[in-house]
Image 1 (cartoon, rainbow, N blue to C red):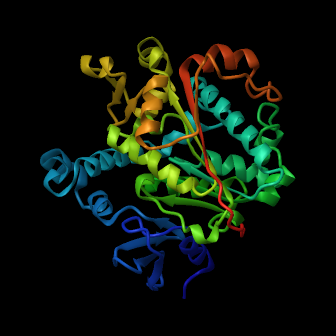
Image 2 (cartoon, rainbow, N blue to C red):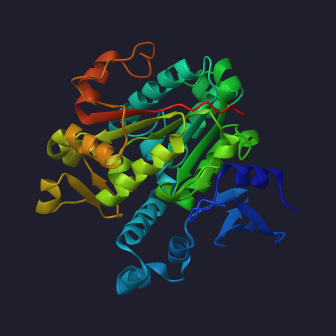
Length: 395
């Protein structure tokens, strides 16, 4: 018998191959359940209620026995994979390698390395301030494209549920940002995290349980394993809810070629339609050599992502690679604008240190002078508004 959590998942997402509804295939009466596309017959899985919507071709590559040995020898069977698929598999393997340490060393709101934590804190404040205004009178669906271990699932879950994330609600640094808000509880319909690493997704589910948000898991908060470029929402259940689609902390730059970067932006545009907002945050290549190669990837971060592999060509192109397979392309404002244009995204604003404004009210979380001195020189934000529709909203 199909569980209510699986049913809710099937209502939210559609086939990653052809964007058609998914159906329950069979009940194996154990942890894994098989799902079937109603149109193209592609098969997907659900483990403990968590959807894995990786395209079958990529999923079979990831799950193959002896994968690491074979990949060294056969180079990912390039004859059976396109260049984009190959690069996605490489990114998935890198994320899988980092999953256990990533939350503690890179994402944790109080314990992570300061070089990462301070940057993320500005992103947090920027996005929460944006949501604060929307949620006063709009129903909102939030989608994190590249959710990792569930950073925004926890943050927004804490604002929905007054009894969650208690240590963060008590901590002087984090209590203002993580406090319960009635507007979030009432109007934030769904929080959806998409990550192509199943290990990251599983870890985010564990963290949601640990932080007191287990009752919301697969009911209102959904960690889903999927490739953002191939992810499709079931728009019929969202109608005109305002959708906020975010891609932060350099996730766009972790896409290993320009084609994947453009595809990601196009997918975000589609996810945000017919009424929504896209928010992008990437690293500024102006500081790539002096900060990125020397300071940002300090001891705690390197412990998680691996040591830096630097080549002359990569440095010239502001690309960083690590021994654990991480790829990171840094951008200029013109670079990001060029990607927006190629993805046919209009009505956008690109912000850097010359146009970003300090946000007050969260001084214990991130001081104003820390924003201007430490964050603005190394970040570029892109914000695009997608035009509205006249359809009704159901939430």
